[in-house]
Length: 138
Image 1 (tube, rainbow, N blue to C red):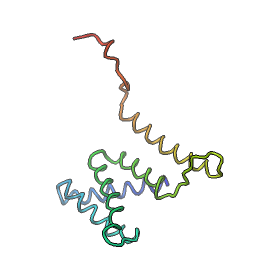
Image 2: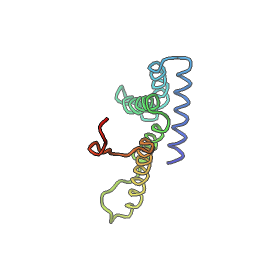
Image 3: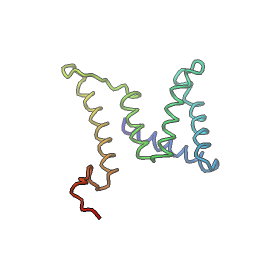
Image 4: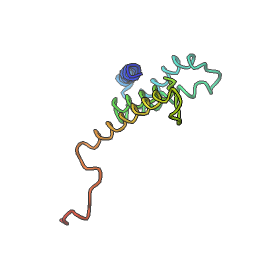
């Protein structure tokens, strides 16, 4: 799952960039990116009418917006979470007595670790809360 998520993210980010270079506009590159991916992914999802295009279209549209606005690291977190939660068919359970509870907890721990690392990186050494009462007025 880690290799699929990371490799998929890098390939899709490169594809978006290759659409961005000749298009010279982010919105146009996003439309071309989503259209090209729909042409490839829709038959795999068993597209029957316009509803079959909805799931891969939303998936690629959100991915393109994340790459455009937040960058490749956020897109890697999104794709990794998508692979763990949906595409990887990770067994999700709330009962810790079933035999596949370890696998479920491992998938949850992997997603939480990535989210905590991203949150810590975003802070960049700043405190989470600042106490405005202790600051001296200027």
